[in-house]
Length: 593
Ligand code: ADP
Picture 1: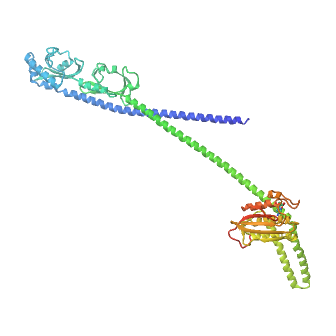
Picture 2: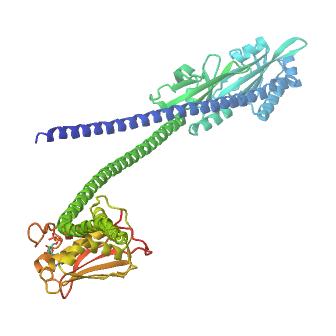
Picture 3: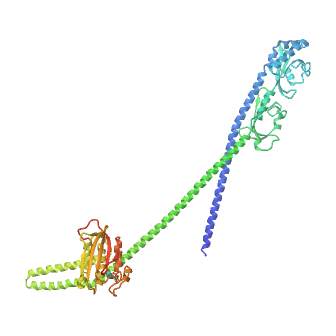
């Protein structure tokens, strides 16, 4: 079929568009998720870096103050010894062995009590005159200590503090102070204190996951104290590699030799330590920062996915709703069109039915025309005679008789007027509005219309309709039904031995049932089956057209009633029902215009 091809291509094109739209939505959803994940990650990174930065700076200050406090505590120790009489005596008499021994013992006690590593007294030439480790085989008592920079600097300067690695490699600080008497330098007191306990707490703390790692570099940039012991003796540049400088000034570094993985980056903060010329550094691990950023990215992505899916679901529901609405509207439109068509057809049908009724009326009128001309011809003949008589009587001046004649003429004219009025109402095309109609009155009007035939064919009409029955209908049409039934009865009674028509009525359940019975031969069984078929007639051509019962049935239908052939022993009986009017009317309302 040639028209099937474009339909198929249009539908496949629509399918392709829809698939494309779905792909577009899926792609946008993915982009949205990626974007949200990225944004959440960046936001989390910034927040976490800020937090880490704060913490690292605080820790740096804490470590610095602890270390500075530790060193400051020992500052006064050489001064304490300076005022010792034994030491001054020894410096004044350096050759005295007994003074030397007394001073050494004194130093031993002092060293043990103050928790120092060792204490020495040297003269201005750098000879060690007394030492706290005088009892050790490896004691340097009696040796020259000028090799030690701490000793050299103290003797030349007066007071000093130096860092030194002890014999075991343990971190030590050397505090030196010149002993002066009366402006003359006698020698110096040198105390070595250990920073090993401080360093031990750093090492211990560094073992805890993700904590900061503090370390100290000296004026030569060498690491002298460290939470990571292997770093000692190396420079900062040897231990770390600068990764990048963060916007707020902190440095992001990687430990030398560590795998190039982001989780192994550290935030590096540093500050100088007062008076020592050293710098304290703190490395803070960024492992948690990356972990948080990853979690935030997942969270952001998941949130975006939920929102996106929600939007898709909402959009889908709206689409389905819109489709439903469109379908309902289309149905409504189709319904409206159908209703309009039905209205049109109904109107056409009504028009056709009215035309049919009208045609039936005219046909009936044709059938009645003989009777009507007879009915009007009789009074006309009488009128002519009465008029002639009146002229003769006037010539003879018999005025009383003229008046009687004129009265007769008036009555005849009134009778003729009634006949024409009934015919006019019967033929009227547009139906009158339904109203209460006195049934007996309608029967009487119908009787008058067939009166000529009744008289001529010597048919008796028995009117048993109660005077107080009123029905709701169009009066003219009711008369048409009655005339139809009476004419049919009259036709059936032709040549019948008994010629009688009975019209009766009674009320049942709010309806009036009207019966027209005749004493004729009754209904032919074949005719009874098809009684209401249009143009079914048994009458000779020119007399019947087979529309009377069809039209009558239609008229009765209009007021919700039914016309049927009732069972009867003799002749034929037709009956129909009409709605009863609630209140009986006094005056006739039908058949008069
Ligand atoms: P028409 O009178 O023009 O024939 P109707 O529809 O009025 O058309 O009647 C149809 C037929 O029904 C009549 O031809 C007649 O055979 C039959 N019929 C109607 N009324 C009677 C009656 N009272 N008695 C016997 N037959 C009747």
